[in-house]
Amino acid sequence: MASRNFQWEFLAASLTLTLALIHLVEANSDGDALYALRRSLSDPDHVLQSWDPTLVNPCTWFHVTCNQDNRVTRV
Image 1: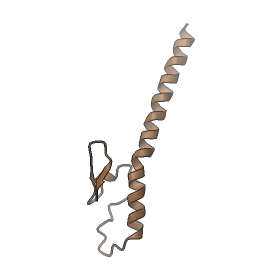
Image 2 (image 1 turned 90 degrees about the horizontal axis):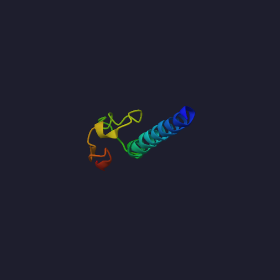
Image 3 (image 1 turned 135 degrees about the horizontal axis):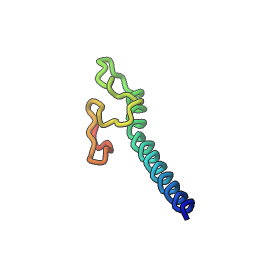
Image 4 (image 1 turned 135 degrees about the vertical axis):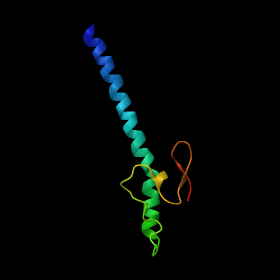
C-alpha cells in the first residue's frame, strides 16, 4: 500500500513540475517575439537595451506593459 501511495505522490509531483515548466516556456514566447522585433529595428539611442532575451519575464522591459497574467498587452 505504501508503494502505491508513493507512486501517486510521484505522479502528482511530476505532473505539477511539468505544468510549471510549460508555463515558464510559454511565458517567454512574448519575450521571444519582442526580441525578434527589437533585432529588426534600428535603435541608435539604445532605448530598447533592457529587452534582454535571457530574462524570463519581458514585463520588466522598458516600454512594455503587461496584464495580471504577465502577458504583454502593449509596447
